[in-house]
Length: 409
Image 1 (tube, one colour):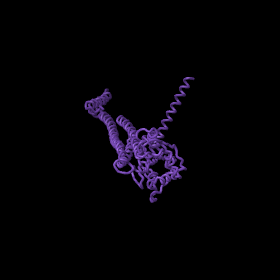
Image 2 (tube, rainbow, N blue to C red):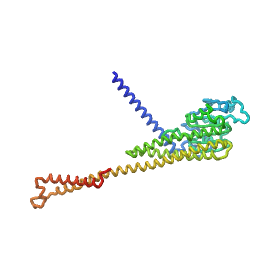
Image 3 (cartoon, rainbow, N blue to C red):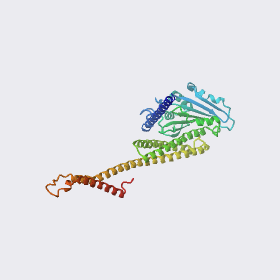
Image 4 (cartoon, helix red, strand yellow):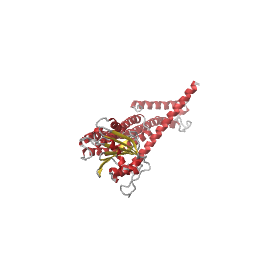
């Protein structure tokens, strides 16, 4: 009974392990499909050709919209886990939380409001937000159509920043995140309902650092820095994968290795494209003089600029590694082909004198007509003599090849 129970447990564990492997492979295939879709069809969410600018509609694959809000200053912190979308039609309801804050003393910073929008399916809610906070229709179009390149714009007194956030998993997949500053309100728009900025929310809640003592521009810096820093774990994962791939290619290259090389080449090209655009974006935020970003915050943006430069450098290095691995892969295949041809050539060369001997003694000369017509064929040791001659020729050829070093790896 105990042996049967142990066997059943082992089979159950094996089935669970197999299910987890299949689920992991299925998830990886879905991620590869998502990456290829965005990489090869980057404009699939754009407006129809000839459509009026600023006319936007929700994408069919967009996730359900819900909104969170945080209102804070040096003394007070108010967090709403989910804002009722039905109240967005009442413009006064959006700012209702501001009434509960103490009036800022003279010289203190005003209160900051952070509205975090998840999902871009509810166009009614998005248009209400755009109308209340003065977003230009083209700005809303850039937010909803998530094929935009990272950029920074100021339109009608509203600052907008568009970036690409990664989920830190291989294969590389990015989500567009958009930030809008209108007055002392920052609105962030995310494609998916993921806690991308949970670390910033926790810092606000605990009051750690200077975030509660700074203005809305410093909140923007914190969110931008979070997006940039998300690329470091991703590149570390690529580094480990490339290291393993290099070992596999060096030891015994296979067709699967070639597929992985091509995959890494495409994904690193996408990371490079995104990183270069975000480098230019942060550089503009860092140096351009605008009323929305203080010089003090621009000093902090230098740190984000250093990070994105580091990301660009590492990405370029990895792209060179992938190119080297591709060359190494074809070199190893060529070397393997050469080794096979060398073995076949040696075998053929060894059998050449043996074939010659067999051909000579296979000629049909009649020894009765002449004493010179292969008299050894009538010899009682003729057959062993021919075999010995073939063997000696093969051994001689092998010794010659060994002396020349042609049989050594």
